Image (cartoon, rainbow, N blue to C red; front, side):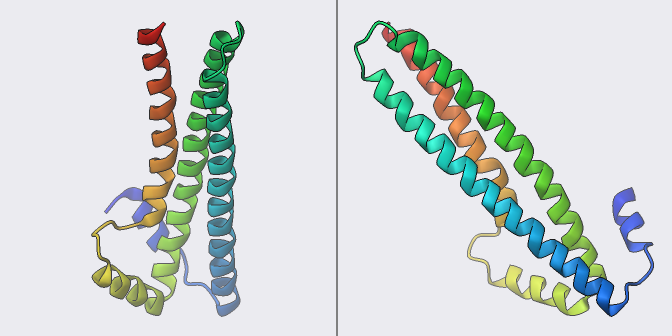
Length: 150
């Protein structure tokens, strides 16, 4: 057990209204997590499509423009990764507190874990890392492919 786990468990028990606020805060933060995921996914997809369009162009500015767009894509992907992982820490902390405060929530999580098809503990953890790293890999691949083709 880590120091953070001990610190969370050492907190005084919450009253009913405090527990309700804890759950409301968790729901709000999860909404922020998924809204941010959607925003960056749309932004990166549009930037990727625009980059592919410029890449297919034969204009003289195409090469430096693609390089600029790829660098921008890598930076946005890294910001996205940072933002999602940062929000994930808050979500996991709120979930941990909810498990301590509400035994029925802990039991629900346990039952859900038993029924999972794939033993991944958290879809949020998977999503926080997968898409930003996927796009980062695609942006790097474009740079590598471009360096070999021209």
